[in-house]
Length: 322
Ligand SMILES: Nc1ncnc2c1ncn2[C@@H]1O[C@H](COP(=O)(O)OP(=O)(O)OP(=O)(O)O)[C@@H](O)[C@H]1O
Ligand SMILES: [Mg+2]
Image (cartoon, rainbow, N blue to C red; front, side, top):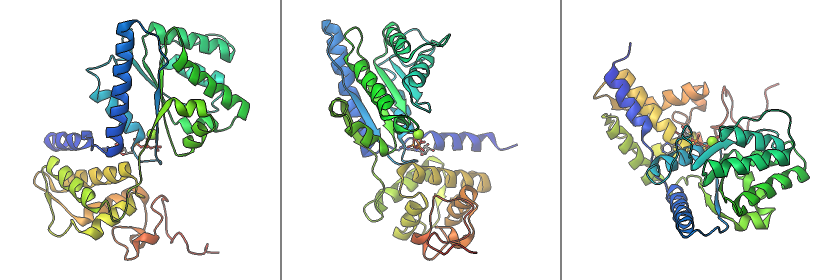
């Protein structure tokens, strides 16, 4: 059985959200949309609303950013999905993203399971009724790049049109928040009317030179939160670059590895442990099962390693062994 105090410290480290420029922008847009909507409601005005599109690669931190947004703004809007009024509803785009599937998934997220086999348009009429009944101001669709997968152009356009119509609904407009991989940009740009209604936010990839200092600061902060020391000489420019490479230059993955390294140090060394280079190398091995020569924390020529592949035993650009 693990020391409950250590468990508690690890939980505390895991729960820490590191604010980023993209998160700040997301929150600013969100709060201005919310303020505008509250003012319109107070004046009894039914205007068209706008939404937000947040894009980033896998592991950049999109889903986590929205979760943090809801948590940070829980005092400004009703977010409890179990209550009658829920002003923020979140769901994942189902596959294939047809009118019918997306509509049913939205209805389910609204706590109104569908009975019988109904047409897409009928389902969406029910969605609109439920959005109004539950006073939903924002509808968040995660994995929204899947709106374009496994379906025809016509079907995708119908879904896009329906999402636009939610924001223009004269009875109860609902702002749409789309989050997804960079392919989502193309979907949004294919429809200028949709693009015009969404504030764009992008989670940029890390830069091997520009982000050295912020990455090292972040490690210090997480170690402090974990109440552990940082080993002398760990926080070098090259270490930051190894970490960024191991995370494929994605902010979320970088934090995830750092958090796991702090947890490993705590589990191995207890309170007052030291965060060492070895903790990071071990975490990378746990995540990828890669041999040392393909571990970005250990290999000399780490930039050649493909950090996304697991079970790797060879360099990305090597010939396939026959
Ligand atoms: N700002 C942050 N502070 C702390 N941890 C973060 C932050 N952003 C992301 N993370 C962590 O990074 C990991 C990946 O984040 P997340 O799942 O949100 O990525 P994503 O962009 O939604 O990826 P995918 O497209 O694969 O769904 C998670 O473990 C999350 O806890
Ligand atoms: Mg996600």
